[in-house]
Amino acid sequence: MTRISASERRAALVSAALSVIAREGVAAASTRAICSEAGMPQASFHYVFESRDELMREVVRHVVEREERSILPAMSSAPADMREAVRRGLRHYFAAVVADPDHERAMFELAQHFQRTPGAEHLARMQYESYFALAVASLRTAADLVGARWMRPLEEIARILVGLTDGLTLTWLATRDDVAAHRFIDFAADAVARLSEPAAASSPHEPDGVHRAGIPA
Amino acid sequence: MTRISASERRAALVSAALSVIAREGVAAASTRAICSEAGMPQASFHYVFESRDELMREVVRHVVEREERSILPAMSSAPADMREAVRRGLRHYFAAVVADPDHERAMFELAQHFQRTPGAEHLARMQYESYFALAVASLRTAADLVGARWMRPLEEIARILVGLTDGLTLTWLATRDDVAAHRFIDFAADAVARLSEPAAASSPHEPDGVHRAGIPA
DNA sequence: GCGGAACTGGGTCAGTTGACCAAGTATGCA
DNA sequence: TGCATACTTGGTCAACTGACCCAGTTCCGC
Image (cartoon, rainbow over all chains, first blue to last red; front, top):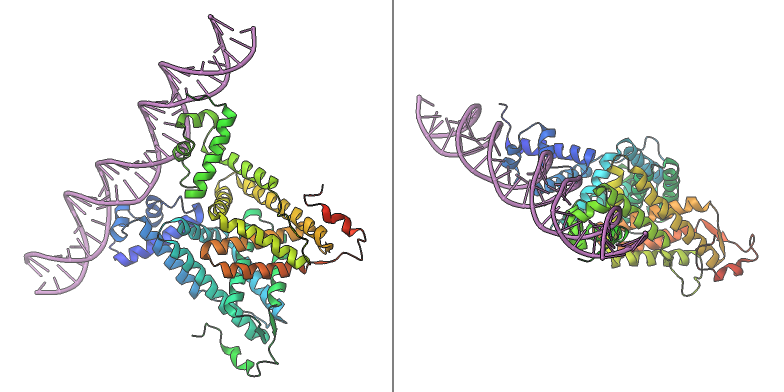
């Protein structure tokens, strides 16, 4: 009888839950299915989790945390301009979606699940806040890389960017039309880049910011 | 004992299913819940439907049909330019989303459900085809109204437009941030309008089209 | 006004679900 | 060494699910 600490068991169950959700959807993620995925008896589940709902809450927390730790797309060579930078970023994101469509679908399903679960709406919001934070960081990095500045508050553009990636992902998931998706990426890159302008004029100290890759406080 | 024809019963069940799905989600739309919503015994369900799956298929067909019959936003006064036309169209759409968020969520859930149901992926695609068709019609009407022409194939722009509305809707559903949504609308209208150009040069008869409000053949 | 077809609805079925108990076994501290 | 605490597990429970049977009722064409 391998003895596992309660916290390790929680982590294992969260991870198993994510696998099941990605593979078969939130609805199919029963306590039995999750326990079977994790290879442990059902009773262990209720030993470390109050209920299925508590597990689900833990799942979002985990997902959000992982997303915030996720590495921003590293540009191997500096992009020529903002249009190119945004396009590369979106292509990078889209490639990840194509590589693991179930994962993205799982994220959507989780958000939807919590929008519907009374008292858990804030979890759906939390998930999006993490998307926004990621977008802010990406936009800042892009501006640093190409030496441009954003003409609107970063948070505003970040929300638009998240909306664009959501639309891109959802439409592709439903149609699996790669060509249309890339046209959308080009369109979005063009439109977003238009919200920036060369920084030389207004920000003489710009090069200083180039080294910052993370999210400044 | 009120006697209802099988086809009427099917329609009633489809409608009840939609209500339940909108209110509580696809997962909660059990045959019992649907029958209770429709006020009829469960056996009637299986008299007119082979299975729950068949009902669900009928639900998409119904939704798609209704969408295709839906009236395009009628512009009370001619918009000044394409930017204005697209913005008005998106605002019109968004107002409908805000007025009945559950309905839009139900559409997303249905699409997701069919993406996951083996052998029913084409239904999700069908749903999106109907969105595309609607977008094509809207774009054509807009071009007629402002006397402009699209610089890319209508189908291409339509797919982009659907992606934009998806992103707009999904982000708003998760955050309920009206201000951000309207900023997104302005951004999208601007970007989409840029794909058109005044038609004067290529279409001298443009004023003729102004009166048509419906979908040209 | 009659006979067969169309429709009704109470009830049953096996399967699945979330929850949880009680009886165990290992662990760490005194 | 002993004992309280932490952890494990098979089994059980009521509630719910989709499916569907069948005896009864109503309708429509003749």
